[in-house]
Structure formats: C-alpha cells, structure tokens
Image 1 (cartoon, rainbow, N blue to C red):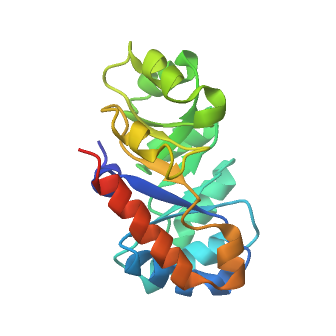
Image 2: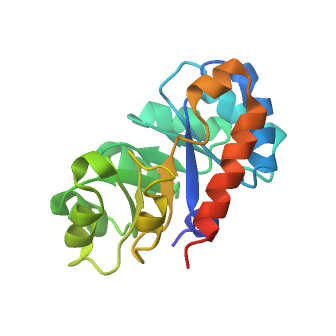
Amino acid sequence: MHDVLARIETVRLVPVIKIERAGDAEPLGEALLEGGLPIAEVTFRTDAAAEAIKSLADCFPDLLVGAGTVLSVDQVARAVDSGARFVVSPGFNPRVVDYCIGRSIPITPGVNNPTQIEMGLERGLDVLKFFPAEASGGMALLKAMSAPYGGIRFIPTGGIGPGNLRSYLSFDRVLACGGSWMVKSELIAAGDFAEISRLCRRAVELARSVE
C-alpha cells in the first residue's frame, strides 16, 4: 500500500470538499486541522478546485491534500501541479488510472461491480473507492462483492454520514470512508468554519470509537 493511503487509514476519514471560492481554502484548512482531520479531498466540481488545492498544499504542510472527481488526464496533471498528493475518481477510467500508475500518483478509482475490481487488480491496485456506496447497495453489496477479492480494500463514499459510518468502518475490508457531511459546501460558502471544526471533531471521535 502506498504511504499516502496508509496515512489515510490512520484517520479513517476523507472529507470530500466542494469549494466555490479559492479564498475559502485557507480558513477551511485551519478548520480541518483544528477539528483533528488532517486530510482534504478537493473535488474538481468547481473552477476553484486547482487554486484551492494549491492554497491548502502551500499553507498547510501537515494537511494531506488530494483531488477528487478527477475525470481526465488533464485534471490529474493540474491537480498534481497544484500540490495534490492523491487522486480520486468517481468511476474507473483506464486512461486516468494508467496515467497515475505510470507516474506513481496514488489513485483510488470508483468501482461498484466485480468487473471494475478486476480491472484494478490487473493494474496492481489494492485500494479502490466504492461509489456511490449507499445507492449501489451499501454494506450488503460491499460484503458480497468483496468476498472473492481478499487483497482489495475499499473507501466507501456516497450517502455515508454519522448514522452509518460505524457500520462501514467496522468491516475489516474498509480502509476509510469518504463523505461531505463535516465539510458541507453551504457551511464553507457561509464562512462557518467553527461549525466545520465542530463537525470534524465529532466525525473523528465517531471513527475512533470503532474497534
């Protein structure tokens, strides 16, 4: 396992961030760290993504910054040039995955069926994103689907929050869970970074309560 993914495993949470204004990145980074959550997956769902990644990476060396919703090789290059240390994609795009592997960029592509898992296995990946987790069948599907593939672990994302986080993290095939409930875009837009810190602290405490 890549050391970046091993670091994610120690926290067991990946905050998935949609940020509209790059100027919000610095106070957001402070809020994440104050909340005990030293990871940020900034999604390429807004025009501010690359600039926000750069701001977080430059200002907070203790923050593990990655790029999410990466759909193209160009976005990978922009993300890495901006300081992203890992890449997450919603689906399994062979061009994007192969580009990252060829450049030793940690990538967790999205999967929700055995064929996609085997595409990852063929490329030597040992951590995949299970997405969209709840809409695809949740824990029942994840347990059934992962059974034949003992060497793979997952980062479920999509529909996960305080109500079901512990059930996912209790499964030994889950490396970490992704979610946006502690970094809601409306809280970022409103500048309510104190609330983000509070939600991050609660999320970290909940994750740590899972043995």
